[in-house]
Length: 135
Image 1 (cartoon, rainbow, N blue to C red):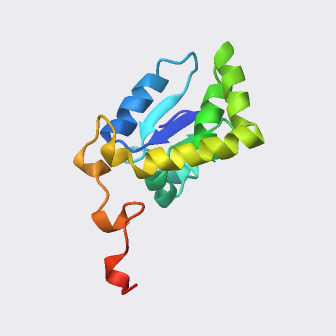
Image 2 (image 1 turned 60 degrees about the horizontal axis):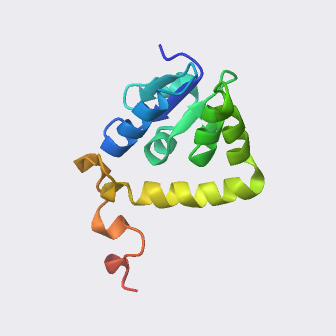
């Protein structure tokens, strides 16, 4: 069973997996588990959410997604990483971090370590017109 806190990520995405391997080096006890192998129901993580963003589940079963997941993970670390997580969670910084996270998540198919699972269909890529809508 997955231990808490847990970091739930897309195990089919090479970029996501490489990023989590870097996070595994941080001074924190966290169970990093691909959503495809996690007991999402026990964790309280909707599958659709796990498909869309990294999710940090803290020891109280609170869910933190996207940039907030990164901040929560860092706040659970020892040393200076805890401060970095607190800064990242500050309202002004967090709004910027949310934009950066979405930008990276939406372009992960272009990032190093990509796999076919990272590929977005052309019609789903940001900035591409929806050719099927007649607009």
